[in-house]
Length: 436
Image (cartoon, rainbow, N blue to C red):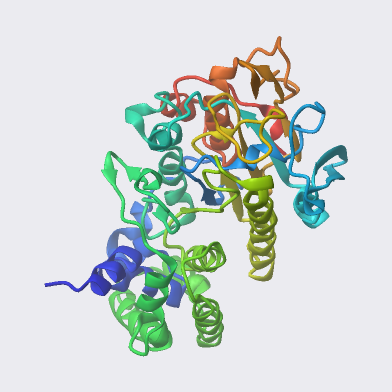
């Protein structure tokens, strides 16, 4: 019988360590799976050239107060924010656009803020277990597929990943689990990833011998069968022993820093999975308050906003240090936001009318999409003007369509053609002003 670790290795690295062999040699997994057919049978990439991105997808079924202290919530003085000095209203710039947010957001490097977009959306539910429905854009996706899985399906052939299915590292409740093609996907905690890959007999420790063994086998096949052009193609892709040594050491250093399943560890694990080209989309959980009905002086909201924004800064710094800043986008989508009016001094309730997502990456034009206005005794998302991206009562994107429009815009951001996006998501409008 397979042990849990063996099963996890298979899920992460593919049969016969095909993913690790791809990492060790630099050759596409398809070429290693079937060398004789691969050059003719490489899966077609249906995404616009230069557009594909790896995606780190932050999601929470807790309904965090992320929506309460971001740009776009400081224009109305009746919206309540924590009084802690750490959360003081602070001026910042998003791609040259002056705005205000809680102080932690202003601490992000300007280079990050200049790729950051805040989305004021309506998920139309106040129910925690509806998180899968929200990820499926409330009934607007084909066959109920989740947005992370739609992204993964279209990006995998272009990025040459081992698998099309996304991986969830940080699900804190069953409602945050992902599905792909109607099948539930396993949750792989960061510590499990570390234990699988870095033990003394683990696959990463044998990366260089695996490289040499794989290339010997491949060259044995192609010695008499490949033409000159095919041999040159393979030789251009092959990773040298010195490069493999650096890859191995970088990944081992990164993974050995994982000591728990916190967001810090999830970030390290997510970047390692991207470096190993395991999957196009990795889901993580960044806390921004939790289900804070009872939160005296909004102390937990304050603490987790500070730590949550710091986690984003740490992720962006790690992507920069690994040369991935232009290849990875961060997207978020939570089940709902929290109430915003002046009664929310010692805690907040569920808000079905307002949720804030953020996107950070090369494909995005920094700014604020949508806005907030009084709704049902509290505050909710405004309709969006699809041309300008601004929130307006007369906006042509109705509040009930803002969620699907966010999904359509995410597909456009990574280059999914309009026809394919229309099939995947049946409603909504691309907000072109949010795209770089």
